[in-house]
Amino acid sequence: MLTRVDGVPRYKDFNTIRKNHHVKDEEVLRYVPYFGETDDVDLSETYKVEVRSVGEEEDLECIPLLLDRWNADRG
Image 1 (tube, rainbow, N blue to C red):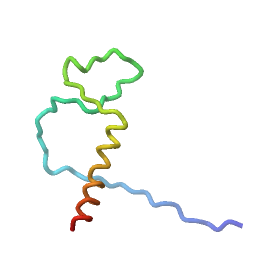
Image 2: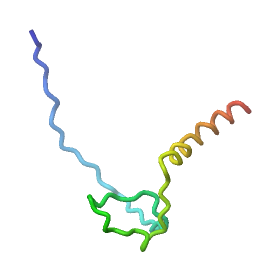
Image 3: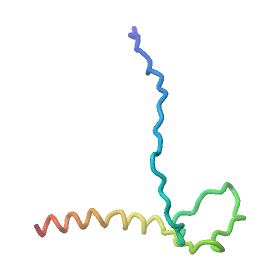
Image 4: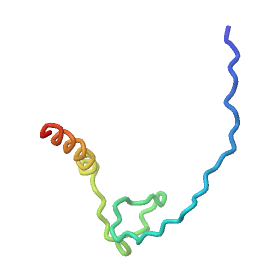
């Protein structure tokens, strides 16, 4: 026989943003946004498109780990 389990309480909570951050627009597009199942959008007219391959992204993610190991071996 199953025992009764109390449900999760309902929450009403929010966080406000106290300070706005204004930054300069990027000139290089590194991630292609999803616009649906269409190829009608040509972003190269507005941005310099430099989208990396999956392999390049994985290599870049490994660099901090390799640096940590290298620094640990030296010190």
